Length: 429
Ligand code: PLP
Image (cartoon, rainbow, N blue to C red; front, side, top):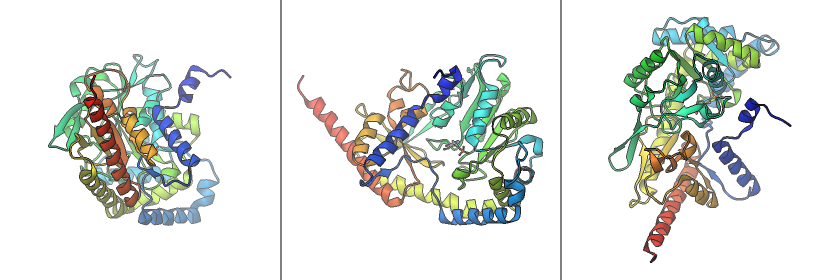
């Protein structure tokens, strides 16, 4: 079978996909072992949130099944949901958007894919790239382009804080040189580091995007107004160069595949056509369910009472276990915790490599995610050097007991790696 160039690109598994396949092969080959998967990207199934969605879905099913499930619908989105979205954002943020600014799709991943396909690549004003203004960022972005290597990250500036914390800063000077950008895309809070874009930084990125006359897509998958997994409550911004992307996944409906963008009409209109050409429209029963959650702002109460505190609590729990378990003689730090579902751990030691600790932990029945996959071109030598291969992502969603045992085993693996390095150093040449 011959695949087309696009076919070959889309059929290539990402580095992270290979890890996920490895996790699934290892766990199904030894189901009797107790595996602790601290690498999961799934949001937690919070009982109060599941019950609430189930109630709304039951209502949507009872009241509108024939209308929404037994008919095709509009590519922009179910009119009731599109109205609920415009009403919600105009009410909360004093915007003045209308249906022409909304595009509903089957998950925000696909909407990001469509935007990347439309606004980057050959045929635009210039042969342009999807530029990630601050790598590390969501690995899913690297598969968004149908051209090989078209997603390109800008490395961050690295700032250490105290003994055990660090943070990434946007390298705005480097971003402003990316005249090859067809679109900028970043998540805030970010996956993996949990970093939140400050309003000043956002204004600078908007200015750069404006100078290049390209869109800045901001992915709020973990942010405000829902799921609100953040300690830096930054309201989304309406701007002529900004495409705002929202997802219902982390608010509890990852399996239903629903997301939407809010954007100026010149960006939204072609996206609606892309939805029509590729998938006709997003599933409608879930659209009817989500419309109910937005119409009376009920989603806000659920976020405030059940989702934000759940992840804040989990973060505290995981970080305090790391602080007490990880060896004190090792130079480890976590990224300043601002939001998202993960803790991003950096071990700044010559002997540390993310793939090695992944392998050692797998032998102990624990999975984490090696950090290199969140950078673009991690093998290429550049100023961040070893850092690109010295981080791992730990998920906050496993059960607390699994988190506690997993952290103990991470600490053991680090101690073993450190002792092995000491023995090698002591060996006479
Ligand atoms: N954006 C980010 C930053 C993510 O981490 C994820 C999934 O983990 C997605 C988008 C995908 O979201 P959706 O389920 O809406 O496609």
